[in-house]
Amino acid sequence: MKESASASDPDAKSAMLEDFHSHLLKSRRIVALLGAGLSASSGLPTFRGAGGLWRTHDATSIATPQAFAADPAFVWQFYSYRRHMALNAKPNAAHYALAQLAKSTTKFLALSQNVDGLSQRAHHPPSKLKLLHGNLFDLKCSDAKCGYREPNNTTDPVVPILAIPQSGQDPTATATATEPNTNPLIRGLDISNPNHTLPSIPTASLPHCPQCRKSLLRPGVVWFGESLPTDVLADVDAFFSADEPIDLMLVVGTSSAVYPAAGYTQVARNKGARVAVVNPDPGSGRALDGKRDWFFCGDAAEILPEMLRPLVGDVRGVIDEKGDAD
Ligand code: BV8
Image (tube, rainbow, N blue to C red; front, side, top):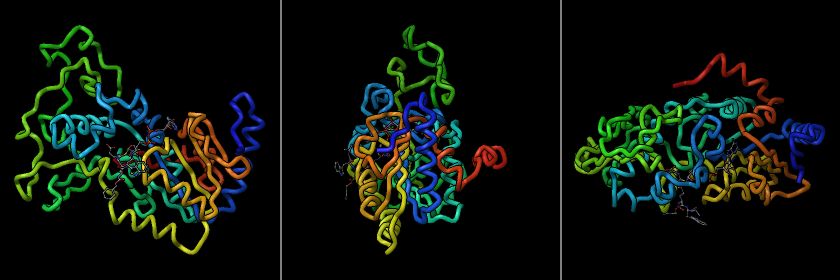
């Protein structure tokens, strides 16, 4: 595996980048699998970051229909917190580089596991961005039979009672709980800190469906145990089953632990793709083939613009010019 020798070995690093660039320039069809690491340097926590915990709960256990049925207020506080952070975050250079690649001539499709909306705000063309796990800012009725959907609701909080509590609001707060919040994306108390008491919210005050007027609204994301959106799956399968090879697969900021998303890397490999992994975790390059693949060890926001420069130029210019589509 062509590995980006540590920063201390710039020669090996630039040799590998050159090798990657020569393949990139020959590539006609490219796919990218995107994960939470893509948005890490925008300040958004990854799923496995901080031990994968939100307060004392495993984030993957909150993102389930069972958790919503058992305690919809808690699950809404989790999603309202993530909506608040995502709205206060900004796309980084990696989001812009991928958006520029999508605008270049090459046939490119980005498969995103992220629900934070940052790729969209970096002007990534929607036809070349498949949201495998939905979007924090879409709302839908929790009763699938009702079918109500409300795309792109960026109201923060989605209902007043879900506002991030402000310091001093919690009379039972312990000393540590009154520590000033250090997270710049949170305006108020960082309720991911279990020392903060979560306000108790009656279900009646949670967002309800304006169509059936009986069921709760829920975030338009795919929960564990739920199938991915059929239209998205159809578009992705159409791209993969086209009678043309795939030349390059970019695997950016993902632990490749969640399926079916993680399975697409092998599908691309079966279509002839060489794989380039971008991740600071050396372990994430384990499954790579030494001769054909590349492992770029580091921050996607730093490395991806360099990797894609021959096709997208200097994205810094784009960031200044277009900035954030919020
Ligand atoms: C389904 C939305 C079936 C909600 C999410 C096969 C084998 C085993 C299990 C299964 C299987 N098939 C299905 C399953 C079950 C399950 C699953 O995969 N479980 C896992 C945990 C084992 N899959 C499902 O349930 C899927 N549904 O299969 O339905 C079905 C079929 C028909 C009918 C009915 C049902 C649905 C899965 C989708 C769940 N929803 N998100 C929400 O966000 O709240 S998944 C969610 O977690 C994210 O979307 C993402 O997919 C995943 C987190 O993974 P990553 O994004 O990779 O993030 P992570 O933190 O793990 O890693 C971050 C990486 O970034 C790290 O490697 C780190 O080193 C790196 N990094 C850090 N900083 C940087 C960086 N990289 C670059 N730069 C940096 N600066």
